[in-house]
Image 1: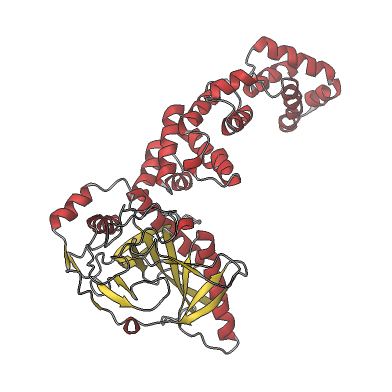
Image 2: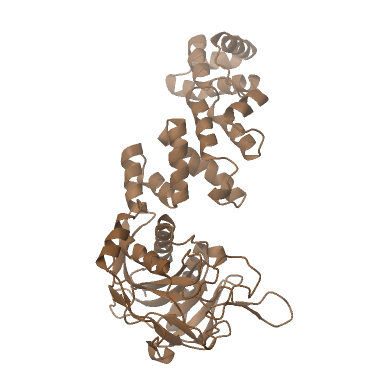
Length: 481
């Protein structure tokens, strides 16, 4: 039997407003537990919520970025459920009339194809607190600092058919929100979290299978692994004669498995009703038009521009535009270097590898875009070779100089391009290796290309890697005949 996985994602995005969605309490991350939850966040008697205008604008910006309908009139409701870190006993959210209606997100896949994933809606709501299970006492702590932080929940249609597509969609959402500046998208801090609705069906069937919801997955890698392991669990269960039940499950990354958390609630279980403390939200068309005019260049448009303006491949352009900070870094480096393709190679290659090796975000890079651009300049003008450039990069990374020029000067890494000095080295290598010279001269053109590598290697060794490779090859050709 051939099975098909059906996936829909609910992405929770914390907005970067300075205050909470219904109160003036701070949303800053990292404060001492329970120091940033005020009386309004806790719904203490006598308090009334006041809607954060910037949160509304941020939601509209996101809707415009995915070409969604903006609902001119939206309503807040109370979603009632009990959980230890939900201090009110209900969550103020939106259901029947969300602020953002249907939209679409286009994703690119590794094989070069694209897919359009429909967004059902995105709504505003408040975040809950956080349960902490960090010691061995068997007890949990509750931190309510996060309670009341503004969220947009982005609900997709069940349009994804693989874990890879789901990750591509999630990465695209991350790109959009960070380009807009409405969220930092930091999954390690909970700024972006994902619930995955997963079901399976036989290929060719139109009816959806029973879905399980995997809650609060907080990394791209875990989203992929959780979906794959849950889909396989459901397939194994059905093939063994069992039945998938609708439920909420948690993903255990240590064991790479999902486990049951609770039976899946339906909307009527939450007893939604309009929030009596908040008026319906009416949005003027003039505000929507004004916000549309402030939209930045978004990932798809930037990728297309990079391909056209800089002559980059679709693959390279996609990597460089995945995050706004990477795109900005690249453009600064390319402008400084005067060579966009070489800058793209270095950003996607050496720089990316160093960041991954040291587990750093680009914002923490010890090498600035201007420094990298200066390094590339020295490759272009033959001051250093590509191989030596890697040594210079490592020195800059380790703080051994404030520019490529300073490192080259202090370490004596300038490339030898003096023809007289190179000819002397070549003559010594030829004289020391008569058998290889004879073999080279007796060989046909095809073998000569391989044999000349021996001589180049000897010369590079003699020059400590500083001989100009292009000149060495040119002079060798003449000397060897």
